[in-house]
Image (cartoon, rainbow, N blue to C red; front, side, top):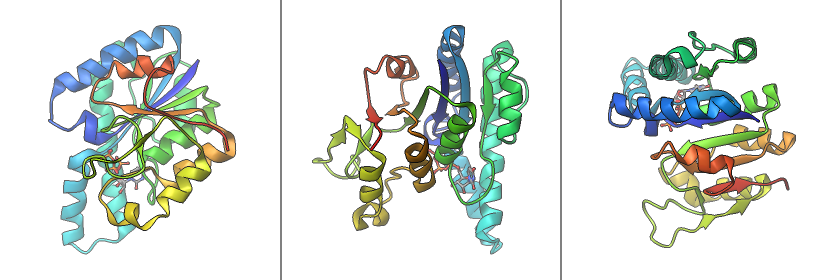
Length: 224
Ligand code: UTP
């Protein structure tokens, strides 16, 4: 299978721990023996810290996004280092790079691309570009919830959800007001228009990626 994996920065760079990158590298190595793997890495706290400094200069939103993108690429570079010979040695700067680097048979790693969206969107566009069989979104909770599971005890995780249902939840007030990052609207639109099979899983445990391939965990986004 051709598999695109997005790893939230809030997961991989959470504790500034090289072991987290290594754990991911090990699992991705195994997966690459059987599948073609392309990875999109997020920015996490370092991105927010850097953006915070840029905001202090009254930088434009696009300029702040640009700083965030740089940090996602730095995180991507760390994952490339952890992967060693398994990875294509350069961070893909755009989707054309990713497709070209993918012909090497190595794991392709990239961060953000351009302002105004998150790495969730990058993952879905990449999945569209390479005609991926599966998009796995590794996040900080077990799947997709109706509300922030860190805040609400009665939050309900979806086993299955359609893009339209996701859009309805995303436009609800509660999600907008809260800090829980649900899913990028651009990402949902792309997943909807191309029927990309997508599984949202808990990325705290890198081995969950393998379970995601077997459809064992998380939330699956199914066509409308
Ligand atoms: P992320 O997508 O990682 O955002 O990119 P995030 O919401 O902080 O996700 P986690 O914490 O990794 O799970 C970090 C920032 O970089 C900019 C945005 O400002 C984003 O908030 N960015 C990223 C872009 O502008 N374009 C991109 O393609 C990617």
